[in-house]
Image 1 (cartoon, rainbow, N blue to C red):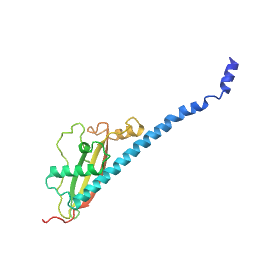
Image 2: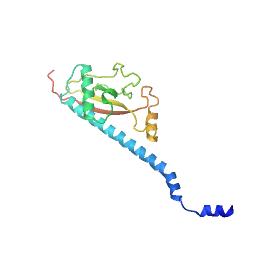
Image 3: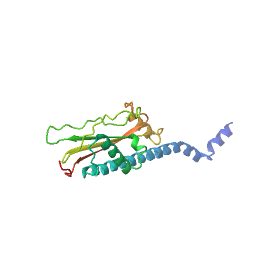
Image 4: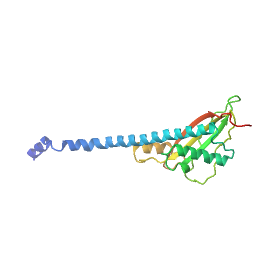
Amino acid sequence: MKSFLNRFLKDESGTSSIEIVLVFPVFFGFFLMTYESGILSSRQVMLEHGVDVTVRNVRIGVIDETDSDLLRAALRTGICDSARILPDCENQLEIEMIQRDPRVAWVPLSDDVQCVDRGDLTAPYTGTLDSTGNNELMFLRACIRIDPILPTSNLGKALIAGNAGDTAAGDSYALVATSAFVVEPFRNE
């Protein structure tokens, strides 16, 4: 028995397999988190791009709707058309457009961002959608609900846990983009 134990302890075959078995899960976990964070960053950049392009169209008068339902639809369509990689954009995107007057008592924007209620996608819109006018300071906020690509990875779990207090979130996270602009004087008022 002692000679078998000595032979076993001196035998070096298979040692690289043990290293691979111990190290592979750690590196694979890093790979999954890198992949998830890359997708998250790409979606955030594209959401901000879509908001910027749409804000430009509102600012110069390309999108000039006075009816709030038509304005909301035009803004959502503009953002989704510019940000093509956002999944189910038309149904998962919610927008707010808020007017503020910097010359009077300043009222900061609320920290509560209007986001889609995944529990009730048919719920009526309850956000703010102020109409635009010449030389008015406007804020456009867009919020989209996205499911993580890998919800069981460490980053996917952390993203979902960050929305744990939000009962409308489900197993998703919210991406938010905000833009401020002043409407160009294109209207004859």
